[in-house]
Image 1 (tube, rainbow, N blue to C red):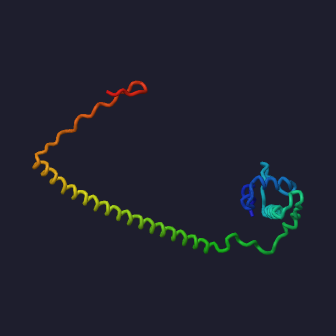
Image 2: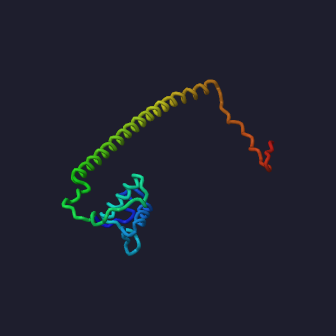
Length: 173
């Protein structure tokens, strides 16, 4: 395992960076700092941090927790640790399937929306055609009826000018 920074260790542990720093400073002899003064954690350090976390979850305080020796934890194990993702190919295959189904669903949604919009546009075209035909029927009838009755349309009388402003009050004329 490579060396982890405080942020990465905090993410793995599910705690804040401040908590990891507090734990490491409590056991300063156990945890190392890099030349810049930042804590770095290897796999053994991470096991110790997980031990601290487990003990705190059991209700112990930092002062009550005693860490196991590093030598006992550093003993080489005969078995290689299991890979993080045992079957990468199956995982990638499943990911491709999910992406394909999402694309297919998105295409179906877009197609349904396009069909709905086309239907609405056709309905609006029919309404416009009906309104145009109704307007055509009304125009000749109105002009013929007014001509036969001898009506003449006169323009509307002029509207009065708007009231003039004077200070905060309006003066009507």
